[in-house]
Image 1 (cartoon, rainbow, N blue to C red):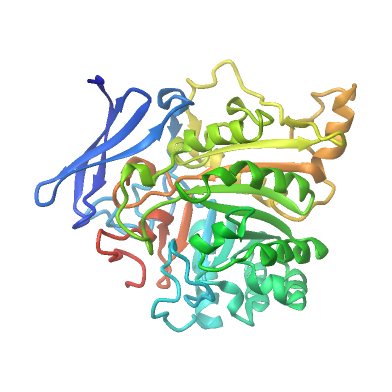
Image 2 (cartoon, rainbow, N blue to C red; image 1 turned 120 degrees about the horizontal axis):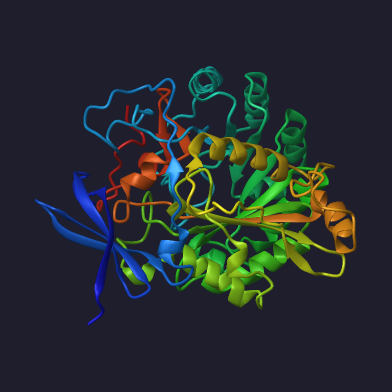
Amino acid sequence: MIEEISFSETQSICPECFAVVPAWRVGRGDRIFLKKSCPEHGYHETVIWRGSPAFSSWVNPKTPSYPENPSTLVEKGCPLDCGLCAEHRQHTCTALIEVTQRCNLRCAFCFADAGNKPACDPTLENLKEQFDRLLAVAGPCNVQLSGGEPTLRDDLPEIVAMGLSRGFSFIQINTNGLRLANDPSYVKALKDAGVASVFLQFDGMEDSVYLRIRGRELLREKRLAIEHCAGHGIGVVVVATIVPGINTGQIGPIIEFAFQGLPAIRGVHFQPVSYFGRYPSPPEDENRITIPEIITAMQTQTGARLRAEHFKPPGCENALCSFHGNFVLLTDGTVLPWPQHQSKDCGCKPIAAADGAAKSRRFVTQFWSGPKERQFPGAGGQIHSLGVWDEILNRAPTHSLCISGMAFQDAWNLDLERLKDCCIHVVHPDGRLIPFCAYNITDSEGRSYYRDKG
């Protein structure tokens, strides 16, 4: 029998009734579990970490930064008082504004359960109020226009221009890409309005993957969407929902496709499947894939072109939420990681949450937008123009690829320590800012706590 090691205590929720319950992170071999028990609905246990990098090596301390202008009072406690409340420990890096609940796909996995009895689209006046409220509370953060499928709105370019006029300098569209593939004039209109980046649903390099996850063959249209964005200088981040048994073997091919797609493709973003919104059934552990498993798959499926040590925990959100690594593609096909500048105190000295959020906002603005001449952050006068560094500095502005991943939480694996550190917030129609996982969380029957509720 494998010995169980207790790492730390936190809080979670019951997936049956949303009650806040004590929870523990425990280790058995190279696996970490979150276990909890509800007085009414009993015991639940979920795997949250499998393999290498080791859980203990990945966690890093962070000095919290609380909202200057909290919008809700702390009455019931996290996650039931979101707004943000005074106990939230991170500022907004990216805010999502949902411009529609309509959709032109019926995906098996959908955070928003889009297209299921959609409400009426918010009016332009509604959206103006959301932009203004967001600016007042969070300042000029990065904005992602989402849904539903936002490109179903003919006036999306007008919404983009509205956001820029209200003081937001980076606007990204979260899309399945169908309209971008089939309507090049619409892509031009988005570019003319000021769109910087497209967050493109992209689950693999085989149509069989799209049939199972999205319900139809889509690879041709995904390629066309990227081509049309490239033609108008809109940066593309390809976003893959990774589902065990369906597309775990696509991780390496997606990365290779992205390198071939430089400079149009600016990043690859992996999202291990989470079980909220719309999904086939409550999950077993074999239905999950964790951050270290994604990192290991990247190393294995790229033939160690990318290696585990190239990827680091985030400085913005909680360390258990994500990973990132940045790479430069040289003319001979060599892939080099950006140099890591770490102090001798790294791993011991806490990271300032506010600094992490600010750096994350700047990075996304600079490197997820369409390619243009810009300073490579590794230079700063510290790297001499010798040998291969000349090519690195010349190629970095246009041929850098950002590879990242975000492990969203559901009712089974929700860790309130992680949720309090969230920097990705959804603008509720009433103006509150709700951490992404809290906004989308659903119980075992698919019922939401925040979405579509006042």
